[in-house]
Amino acid sequence: MGINFDLNDLQAFRAVVELGSFRKAAEAVNISQPALSRRIDKLEDALGVRLFDRTTRSVTLTTIGRVFAPSAEQLLDDLDVALLGIRDVSSSRLGHVTIACVPSVAYYFLPNVIASYRRRFPRIRVKLLDASANEVLGAVISGEADFGVSFIGSQEPEVEFKVLLQDRFVAACRRDHALARKKRVTWSELYEHEYVSVDKTSGNRLLLDQALSAVAPQTPSVCETRHVTTMLGLVEAGLGVAAVPSMAMPGRDHPILTSVPLVDPVVKRRLGIVRRRGRSLTPAAQEFYRTIMEVKRGGAEGSDAIRDDTAPKSASSRKSR
Image 1 (cartoon, rainbow, N blue to C red):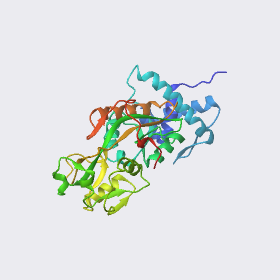
Image 2: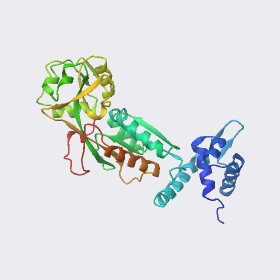
Image 3: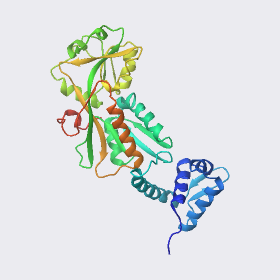
Image 4: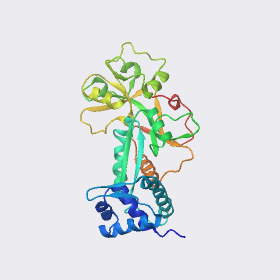
């Protein structure tokens, strides 16, 4: 005996799951609320189960509904994959995408990516997990995130790291600081001034300690923090200068902060996409990945684009937090 439901019924089901409301779901799929209710009733009748518990005030998935929801989503995702090459589904696409990323990427770079993505896919919800590099890896491996954006890969076989660009370290300082007038600054010159730093739990700290083994500061930092973005706040408050990845810096028009390239040596980190090997991206995640590439081609200030497989292995590919 065949199961008597169609694509419209599945789309109605997903809309209710995504939006948590029959009224909002009906608006999203451009039908009346009674028509949407009939589609859900038809789907439930065909499956022989109740998918939602409904009251006058709320709608929630039943236990069977929660089990069925991922399968319905996968069916619709597979259909979208086929249709993306045939017609534009961006105006009607419902869904969600979860991205894990290190804070230095989340603060200034990813907001532009998300804004561009939302203009094309206004109905897709974006969840951003800003966390340490190790936590990004964990979110990708567990499936909590569709993919990650980080500066370290993993030695674990189930994870792949696809390089997007090289991001060099710069000296962050206030515009009224003496270093702001220089075209470039050596690490030794940087450490002649009061400075703030990230602590030993940071993946950036591990990278810098390995790259700067021959450059030893004469004095300790005035303050340590775990995140680059917090460090920039301390610099802006006048507590000192800091070595930060160029991607973490605000734009050239920032009224207080500026940056100067650090040399002797030039230190770079590889930034890339972290994915679970063998796991296909959903259409929503695939389009987000494509948007990252488009924004990157537009130019990440201070960063150097490189090919995926030409960059040498560096300390940044090791596990750290």
